[in-house]
Amino acid sequence: MTGVLARTAARARTPGAPSVGFWTRLLRWSPLVPATVLLLLFLVGPIGYCVLIAFTDTQLTGQESASFVGLANFRRAFGDPAFRNAVVLTLVFTVLSSLVGQNTLGLALAGLMRRASRPVRSLTGAMVITAWVLPEIVAGFLLYTFFERRGTLNALLEWLQLPAQDWLFTLPIMAVSFANVWRGTAFSMLIYSAALAGIPQEVTESAEVDGAGGLRRLWHITLPMIRRSIGTNLMLNTLQTLSVFGLIWVMTRGGPGNRSQTLPVFMYDQAFLKSLIGYGTAVALLLLLVGALFSVIYLRLLREEV
Amino acid sequence: MPLPRHRHHRHHRHRHRLAADAGLLVVAVAFAVPLVWLVLASLDAEATLRVRLPESPTLNNFSAVLTDEITFTPMLNSLLICGGATLLTVVCAALAAYPLSRFRSRLARPYLLTVLFSTCLPVTAVMVPVYGLFVQIDLIDTRYGTALFLAAAQLPFAIWLMKNFMDGVPKVLEEAAWTDGASWPQTLLRVILPLMGPGVAVVAIYTFIMMWGNFFVPFMLLLSPEQLPASVSIFTFFGNYGAIAFGELAAFSILYSTPVVALYILVSGRLGGGFALGGAVKG
Image (cartoon, rainbow over all chains, first blue to last red; front, side):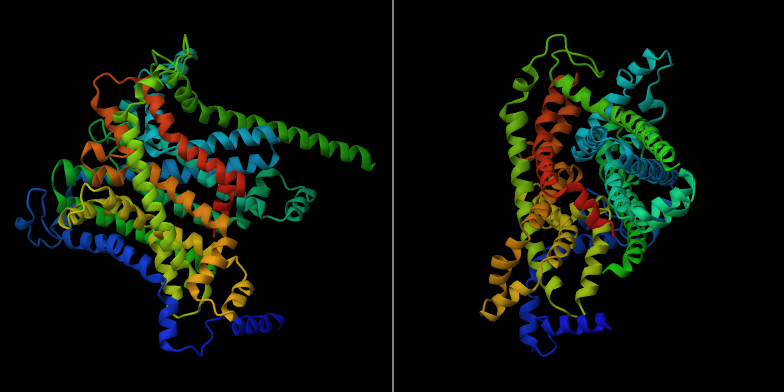
């Protein structure tokens, strides 16, 4: 009842009340023009262009030779072992670093921070967030030195009397996944800190009084209460991870061979190093479609909010 | 009876805290190792790939890279490209957020949903067609072309954040301005934006940080060495020299990272920074 009244009152006060004319309305919405033009020219345009050249055999050497080839690029992609390798590696990279690594570690850190003492909390927060704020290339360079044959990780292993390895050679996809966890965990930590702070104290306390243990509280109370944040976080992390290029490029350049060549690296390699723009764009389009799919799921999660 | 139980509870709390502290410290150390390497190597004349204390700490690595070619030109390029793009993004986002936040229309919701949708698209994927497009319209290898694209790529998220901040400004004050006969640009500039100053700062700084660290966009769109921003020049530094001078590379990395780290500290000190941002996107 009061809700309806308040809403009616709010509508009456809104400047955009129904009685305004066409020109007034046009004028009111005119501030949208600059942003819309910029988005149409530089974001929607390229995406449209992407759709167009994905169906051609465009090469770097000359535009005039390009002709429409239908689905050939896509057929080629699905038949190409290097493409399938890139898909598998992208999946491994995303699952390892985003779904498992960043997400779980972020939640664990946010949870521990609620109990930890203040100085430890600030110190950990500072380290994790610094890794996140650093430019992508610097992060890649730092993790390169960490995993390199002569790097710190092997120094630590030798000190512990454990066998050293050339990590970037033997387990390149693991190395870049760890790098992505190092770089990206802060985001999950921040989202989960905000989410956990939103859980009313009484809920946790009453569960504690009822004698629910830590794991049961986590599973039956905490996780269900922050499930929307979990969904959002997984979605954004996945999208972020799908488009990681610089980190991998600096650490391994997709190698050795193509053992850390995820889809963005594969796309770059085909389009520029092998000059197959049409084919590279078809791969880009597939990447965009996966991103679009995740975006739609994300929007559904947020549905009530907008 | 209540007393020992209480004490038992406190004892429990204490143990929990110790366990949490220990867990966090382990993670903190793991995260710190690469950062410690960065600092130590930058001060070490004979830096290697390993974390080690420099035998005689020196600032020579810094003075070696503080030249026009290595540091000043790329940093200035970064500043021009990212500064210009940030300005454009913030102005466009503030303008766009205004009607979206203030007026009702059947189009507002679809527009916002489209914006949110494009926030999530992997920009990396469009770089190949963007390159093709830039070659055709002659924007390739220009700093302003790169800035325009960076602005467009960051715009959806900026609009979204800006609209959320603007929704937090009560309408009562601007209605007073409306009845005084103020036009919408006056209302926006004089009433709303000053009231959401911290929000605008967050959008601007976040946008700038994202652009400053972006590697792939300028890597694709800029070719001539004298136009490259620091994010790309550091990479050529890394790739082109046969024997990499790790100490110098570390020193340059610190110089290149300092502006964004400082800006981040500035926002987080003012507004709980990342936490506010986490709240803004948590949904």
